[in-house]
Image (cartoon, rainbow, N blue to C red; front, side):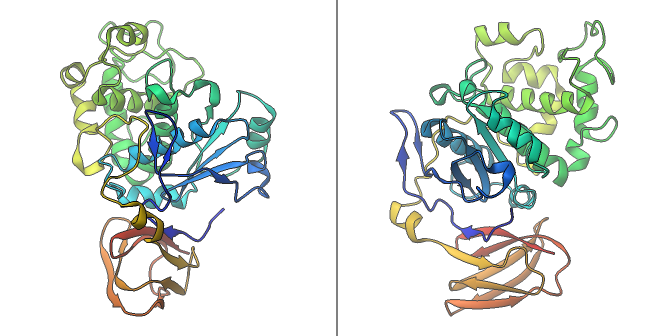
Length: 354
């Protein structure tokens, strides 16, 4: 499902979904309806090259809510530029997406599950568990949780394995989780030690599943999303440190991991509004640059003029060049196979050398 990427920070006009939510995306027709796995979806939103797909009966308000949450989690300061280009590169390379179904286990979900064979899906959403009015609030809106699971599992685990790999004894995350659970358990202990503050007890959740849930709990705790009495009481059987202060004092290893600036994890709670104020409507509408083909193994064609730079996925600059005509080409045949961040003036995107 690779496609030519349009370099656009927020190229779509603002759409107001309700009094609370202002979202700079629009719902479009599914561009991949011929793909059997995606054939049940009619609605689509492109979020920095990542995809939201939804059934026809899913309200546009909720489709845009998913898009806004995704954008806020990867552009957490909401300046219109993704915080971690390496993360975006990995998400795009794996065709990261969020499927939104009308209901759990319906025909569309069955079609998707029976035919999808990619690496870009780590969670799904159902319309019934989405509430744009209370973004991420426990028990009311699962959008933050499921999209965060996807971004973490498809992106962070792959680009920072020593920090976030899910296997036992594989990462800083696994070490921190073993501490939080009061020991290393490959199956659910009965009971957890009294010293544990993370005691998830779903028998269907293996060690890796426990790790991704643990990472989610830490991130939203640090954001302050869980910091109210009803929520604290409601999650106490699974997770104890529901305030940022408790997380910092109780889970020293985990807190150090998720606040380490090297990993650029989101620190601010999403609210379902995404329309970077630094970008005017006119600029969002016209500030586009195209490059193709993507993936490319020999020549990369670029439409637009200005200063172009290309960096590898860890930020090393490979090329810097001023281009003065509207149609240009760059020889990438000597580039190593991998994912690269391409920037033209204020815009940036990702291409893959295969």
